[in-house]
Length: 346
Image 1 (cartoon, one colour):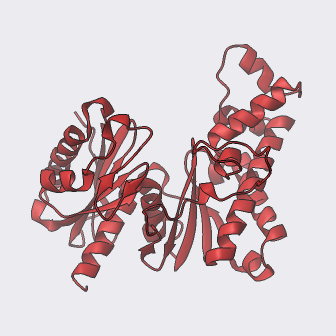
Image 2: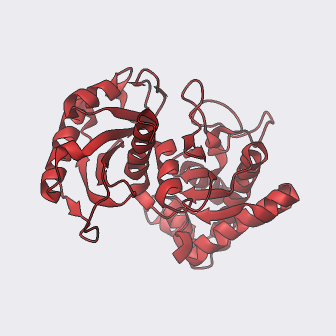
Image 3: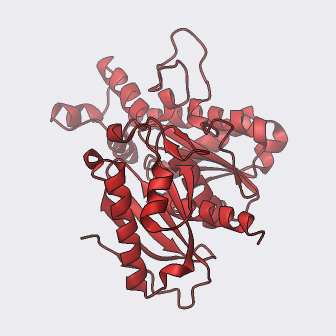
């Protein structure tokens, strides 16, 4: 049984309503939002990837109906649904192509499947682009006309929003900020996509672990060594924890990661000149509430100041995301709202 969460602070929802469905490898997050971007109810259900996409979309649709019943809102008030999924896709046709964490879902017409299951029109988006739109709509980017968003996790995803337009690209592969090239040499690190020198190969959680492990194997002294020898798995979170305790290697890894991300941000800034660059995702080294997180974001700012055009270095806001793991379903609903408003010329 899904654990529904209701937001009782919204006494008079602004109609119409929109729903967001954010598919992950482990869980599917579902939310109902009003026209102002306020979450009325949300829940999460297991993806159960092995059962396939059709079963998942049917369960998501049933869960959405359950949410609406619990909030005592008419299903007819939900005028559009947003669907966010990982991996490559054909947005125009609504087909999920090759999501690596959903191997049983390849080449599947997932948009139409959800539309049929819930009886609603469905807007389709990449999960990172949806998270970017969420931050743009009601998160850290809500004060700006344009943002570039970097989501830091196992990989480095992203999104670019200009006005109310998500830059998805002609082939549904736009805004892949993690695959900008920051090292063109033959010895560059290999990215998970199979290409050399991409930002993701240097600044993802996986890359942080790889770079740290190499330093430990080379004999660099660190408090991390004792934890690894005791059988703990080396993770980006462990690096953050030891950085908080003043470990030199861990702080060096944090600073180097910030340097790489600063370079990646400048590449994007010099192309689109956004009002803000926002960093989200699980690997934020503690975020704004952490001393290491504050060090991390300031190091990114410093790298940008040293490399960007002066006017961009001065004017562009560099900040953490604020929606956390909710950004995906919020952004999916926001993209659905935008699509609905355009189709109805609202």
